[in-house]
Image 1 (tube, rainbow, N blue to C red):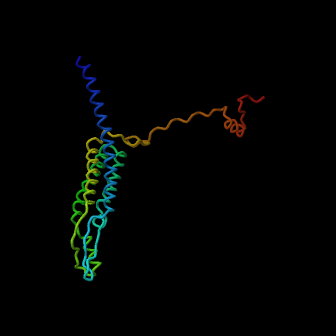
Image 2: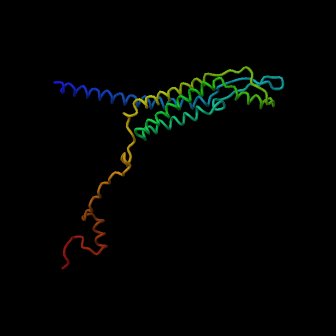
Image 3: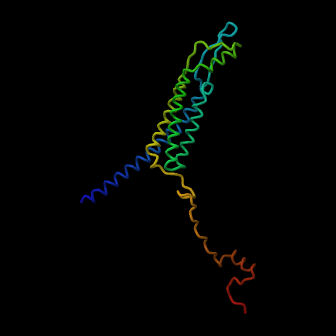
Amino acid sequence: MDSVTAVPHLRSVSAASARAGRLSLAVALVFGALGAAVALLATRQRWSEGTATVAGGAFPLTAKGSDVTGVPAALAIVGLAALVAVFAVRRAGRFAVSALLALSGAGIVVAALTGASDDSALDEQAAKASGDTSATVASFTHTAWPYVAVVGGALILLAGLLALRYGRQWPAMSGRYERDGTPRPRRPARPADPERPEEIWKALDRGEDPTGADPA
């Protein structure tokens, strides 16, 4: 009786594990792709604003995210590549790529938060605009776009954590080679059909009788 009740229990556990794997895969794909797109979009927007004193007047200055730091955009591309590579590797390789995916997201979060208060890009613009290398930006303010990049990095981080937790249950890309690196055996070639027209012509070219009859 115990063995009979154990079999349905194992089946339900296996089915629940398969559902969790499929759900985590879908969520990780959406989070990873969306996070990379959001982070890349945010780095192209205005992150900070300020003014510089030029010839007795105030000159407005602005800096995009890519002017402040190039780390979020670079890590977004790395994270997107890692998200794709998760399905091309197995076991230890999948764990390493999943960790890279999570670290990419964490790096974007840290870089974006740091860039939100970084005024060095505007200081450089102020120095160029005023012709004074010691000039700095005045009335510095930042926009909400750095925090949008933080959201993108957080989504990539969540995708990496899901890959670390459930990646072993995800499918892998099929290849020509088995796990041990040896090529799969090819199917044997089909025997030639002597009744096919091309085979008859080949037999005639060889000086053979395609009918198989003995010469008189």
